[in-house]
Length: 111
Image (cartoon, rainbow, N blue to C red):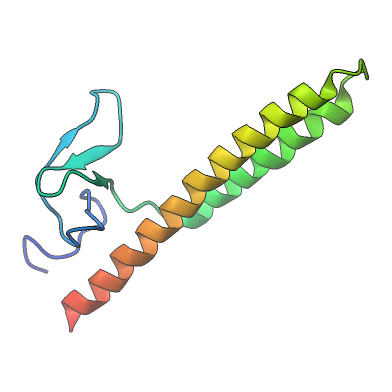
């Protein structure tokens, strides 16, 4: 494997389809910004463990309203939970897309 070849330990830009130079958005962030095109880039993360964790969280938080005493204001909590669930599932979806693009690129690089 060459120095610029596929490496899942290095951030990868799905727009440039390469391991490009990047900079951190914030010091405490795992998200990077590609210096070439300005898009988000991150290390390809195995999607199955992340999916299992997020799905478990989403299922758990969606049962919270059923555990609470009914007061008539549950719809506020339900809406907040649905929004959080949507955002968490969006993170999982984006990670799967990034993973698929990286592996498609990785296969093209080997041939």
